[in-house]
Amino acid sequence: MLDRIQRTPAAPQTPGRRALPTFDALLTLGLGAAVLGCGPDSTTSHSNEVPSARDGRQTRELRHFGADQTEPYRIGDSIFQARGVGNTNLVVTSEGNVVIDTGLPTQAARHRELLLAASDAPTRYVIVSHAHADHAGGANRWIEDGTEVIAHRTFLETQRYLTELIPFFMRRNKIFYPESVPDVPMALAGPIFKRLYPRVEPTLLVDDQHEFVLGGVRFEVIHTPGAEGEDSISVWLPERKVLFSGDLFGPLFPMWPNLYTIRGEKTRFAIPYIGSLERVLALQPEVIVPSHFEPIHGAERIREGLVRMRDAVQYVHDAVVDGMNDGKSLYQLMREIRLPEHLALSEGHGKVSWGVRAIWQGYAGWFHESTTDLYAVAATSVYPEVVRIAGGPDALAEGARARLANGKPVEALHLVEMALAADAGNRAALETRLTALDALLARSGDENHSEVYWLRHQLAETRERLGD
Ligand SMILES: [Zn+2]
Image (cartoon, rainbow, N blue to C red; front, side):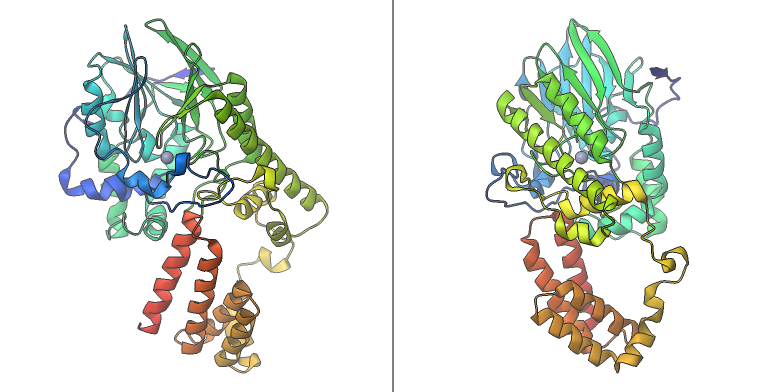
């Protein structure tokens, strides 16, 4: 089912015109990160057994990806790519061009210039894989009179909430992309972002599937939800066996999907994601063109990666459901559920234990059968009293150190937080906090970008409070 939409005049963005230079840096890697699906500055995973990045590529290289590109990269006959934090793909046909994903708003002008060298024919279609700014951000640069702009039906709702919550997401993104998000007053974040990244107005909303033929080339737009949001679509060229996958696989392939991202956003669901992987498997692609990094070539390599991702998500999903039905607690399941060896995947972007939590809460929400869950009184409200009864913050800090010595940094942190609730400047507690965070960072193996950047942020904050 399709919805044809009367286009309201697009915000004026003359094709090829440079975006507001003062704010370029803000947007390219700054405000743009407010709605990025995968950050431009991710740390790599270095799992030994599993190819965690394509041919050893590290996701933190995204922020420089394509910076030295001087001509359109040719993927295949009549398929070209301009590269950046998010790529822009161009399919040239005898009846005009199809643009698939459009990169960040501030990289869009350069992408357009690069791709015009491949073809300056009219843009007949712009297809945006989802509403994140590193995919849809450059769309308005490509829209001409008569251009059909295709997105999923849920694109508009996703675009709405991501825009309404810009200050919230900005606060988080300052933590996860500290080099990229500059200091701007939160009151200005929304207006600046909206000016640089005007709404994308689709003209055609797709539900499950939509096909069209242009210049003899068949395009199949298919709904592939579950990875970076419900509004995710992919584009399949059946004659060429090429799939433009947007962010269906994230920045790495294969990897554990980012079912919940701690920078915020709605939870993504495991079962629809498995459905998306099944759907792609049935197509038997020979080339996958994701919107981050290079294409992936080779039917067998692709199939093997898809099967492993599908089976891993199913395994974890089923383990969570079994555990819920057996009455196990969320925390027990987060501790217990691990991917078996043959399903090991990179956790550089998503993390299995957070996926467990996402699946649990996706089904059951936030109530964990504690009466206090039901009322607006946090456990922290009684921490000062607990500390007094225990003999003061130093006693708690001592307990925390003992936990640390026993290899229990999270338990140590719980005790430290109590001590600091009673005395925010308590030196023994802050120093123990520092050691506990260091222990967690070491334990992280520098693998998961979000975890690593959160811990680094907490370390910096603790050092600041210590006056170091
Ligand atoms: Zn992305």
